[in-house]
Length: 129
Image (spheres, helix red, strand yellow):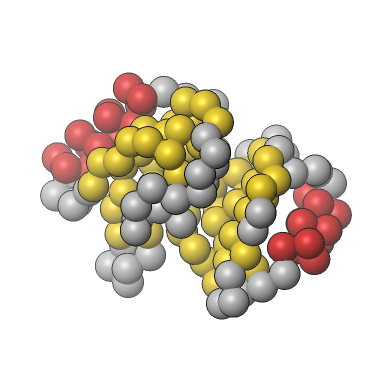
């Protein structure tokens, strides 16, 4: 299964969790200080909320895939198409992940990633979140 990820900066995490919970009729799959994510089945969406002063903006976008092999396949395809990428492994957004990053022409960050397990840290690098 693949699904699109939408990571939003929100100014008030509690209000945002309440709103998006009602909007998608779902409860967060993960809650940490300043962070929540929803694994929504319909429509297939990973919604990530990151508490920051600059609420109401996109943090980053992504596509969650099933395996590290799928991440590497996406990386090879992007490179073959001439799209610059940056591979990353390790902890990000409270999860161990394998991923590849790229930016659209306006600088919006996209990741293709797979979750390998839980982690205790929010960020690993500047690219993450």
